[in-house]
Amino acid sequence: MLKFSLLFIFMKKNKDWFKDRGYPHFSNKTPLAVRKRIESYVSNPEKVARHSFHPLIFKEIKQRRYKESLFNGKVRRSHKKEKNGKIISNTKIREILYATHIDAHVYSYYTQKIITPKYEAYLKQCPILSHSISAYRRIETDDTFKFKNNVHFAKDVFNEIRKRENCVSLVLDIENFFPTLNHKRLKLEWAKILEKKTLPKDHFNIFKSATRFSYVKLNDLKTRKGHFDEKELSKHKKTGKHTFFEKLEHLIGSNITIYKNQKKNNRKELIGIPQGLPISALLANIYMLSFDEAIINELTIKNDVFYRRYSDDIIVLCKENQIKLVEDFITKEIEKIELKISLEKTEKTLFKIHKNRLQSFRISNTGVLKENVPLNYLGFEFYGYQTLIKSKNLASFYREMKQTVKRRHKRVESIKEKYLLDEAPLYKRKLYRLFTYKGVKSRKIPSKRIIYLNGQPISKPFWRKFRGNYLRYAYKASEELEAPEIKRQVRNHWKILQKTILKYDFSNSKKT
Image (cartoon, rainbow, N blue to C red; front, side, top):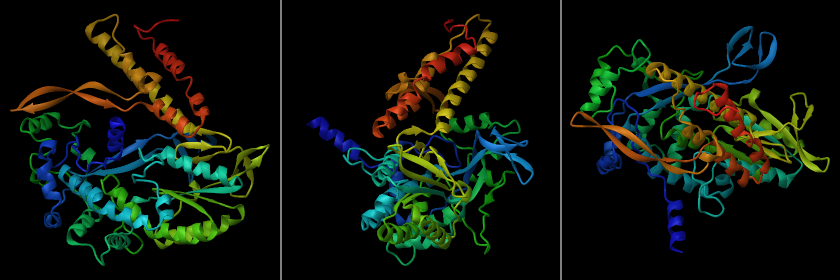
């Protein structure tokens, strides 16, 4: 009974706002030892109202996409595509901006301790509304022992389709979500959550930092060779500072350009908030509040339309004769909040009983039905009669596996050449932990970090928590979705890994 109670308390524990972030920035790291001092500062509205926010650091995350594109007159899986007669990159680019350590604490404290409780209290006034908003929230599972993730959210949708049987799913995506949020509307919705006519001074200062932000490009902090000045960073570390510059004044006095948010709408008003701040996700949800309420009131309550929104991904379930009604209403309401639906990403899927089983049919723009084309939602493919992991995600897993083995092979060959060895270790244990069933269980693994004490580097060992690999996620999804076919999808992972190891002819690998 005691163990049960302790487990319950642990699972119900709120997420901690304080986090010791490891990245270098323009302000020093804030270890756990200074938590009380930091909390005293960020919990004081007068100090937050006067707080001077530092420039953000901007970086791009590039994801190569292997999707079907028109390239050189042929439709094939490629990194390039043709658009308006020009060949352009098919790579998905995410723009991330992250704050200094002290600024991140301000954002995190206000997000979790002040604004989120207000937002959740507002949603609880309408349970249907609360159930409809999935992303960036801590929603309890039915047993109340843990919180829902994308697997649970997908399950809710798939179960609703099974319940309705004959229905249509509309999946819609909002274009350029974070970069196009209107500042005036965000301010009004924020004040509404706080039950204020206008934002208090401390909240207004945070609002200004998230809308009138400045930033430095990460690449501009690198030397000409494309690397950071490790000697300079090491010098700062020896003095106890994990920063790019010893003082912020040195950044201002350098040749590095400090950019400002320049994105504007047709009325030449500044728009958009940074994606990557601890408060960004919450602000995005707050911004969508009036839209969510309109959908619930007009479509869900009056027309029995099932609605779920996961960040900028929207899914609705309706009757076949309601498609135009739903599309027109969503388009109208999304335009009211000065956003736009991506037409090319919109998917319509009809579900009906066919050959004695529930089956999916993709509805083309011309109204033609394509049999057995699944609904793609939150990383899963739902056919009605079965559920699979999205083929693209599975392909990414195997691609990462093969690329990791290739990198290991290059490292092994380099060691053999450097030390004139006939054999060199492959360190297959880590490969098995990352890409096979042997890494399914979470565990603590030994690790180490370098700290500076009186200017001298000291190696400090610690136990790092390993939360399991992608197969752990697949197995959990298979159980939660009651879809044994997912486990069958990944049953060949061991053979694929061994085949890849043998391909690169490692000296210490077994030959068959």
